[in-house]
Image (cartoon, rainbow, N blue to C red; front, side, top):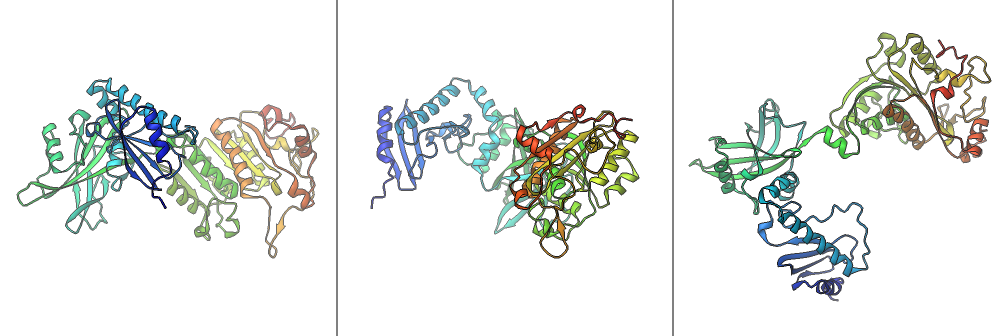
Length: 531
């Protein structure tokens, strides 16, 4: 059986078709194909992983002078012609694909060659952090928060078989729990033109050259030292931690490099499609719906949360809740706080293990939103009635789930606006009753379910909770009042002999809207919001 990559013949023909010169196969196997060639006097290499073109071929330039200071070219010469986002191509049309990647690579190089060296270096500095991560892929160091040269930073260094490894960087003061030396770091903030080239992996001579280019830098004369190199760019700085060890003659004998990344909440929030928001939200009830609300608020960039619930997490709720097996038996608010802090950065969460009514009875909280997801509509109606009477200065959002996948609801209220939860309990202009006119099931039905003994529960899924939580979070993010709902199929209701209401049937038949303004749900004789 031939070990030749099956793409080799078609790739060679495609390279010849674009008038590439000096074509030679460097490596050809089922797993890899690498072909060297020259185009427009530039020495290039095309690499393909695998035996099919399901991904764009990689184009590299093999001239080392391009390995430093050229935007979109890695330390190993790989030319970044695409971030692979949204690129659509026909993997069967080899000629077109090869022509595309070569054209893109040449245009990129020619474009940056038209810049001055200084202009290229300024653009290159913006990519330096990722460039360094490619050079030192196994040694990237993550730091909580931002690096602040105005504060002391300490490098914790461990000696392993006569080599020295940087374990962590601690701000303000040395780590008190560390068994390894903590060395105060020197700082150098400089520009890319004062950084020696890294077109080969840097060593002690590179560090000495850095000192020569930056006369203000005085490296420690101690046996072991640490330096934070910060190179200015459009995003702030690219950071490289450097540790070094001197020999008996105080010459630098060992140098190690650590690209340093800041765990910056603002960056990661934007990377996730959100921005940090200053809203303060209290979530009362962190069960299936409330825990998802808290999670989605964090995803949306809200960092200031108060979680109120007195319950213990039970394994019975594993498939509806954010928490998992290891959280069983823990206080919900504390376990959820730990979970969210492990997932997101820069959170300020206050867990309160109290009943909601106790939390609200002691002091009106200093918040922007109060989310009620207690699963107790009687309690929530009482809370909202009090809020309207006392004119609480924040929006209140209530959310609840219908059984067996029929849907979910959310209502957002402000105490200075008409339209509230009580309005939904006024039918035909009468005083508020016990049944909601927006309910999807007919009244006086048993909808709870038992799977063991007398432990009944409302049958809805984790997906139902997620959909309902999204309605609630949308109200927070939009900072609006109104009523919203989602409607699911009645398949499970029919299977369980649960009768759907006229509201549900009408919404299905007429494809009624899902979002209503506060004015649209307002009832003029509501004793709650009409005061």
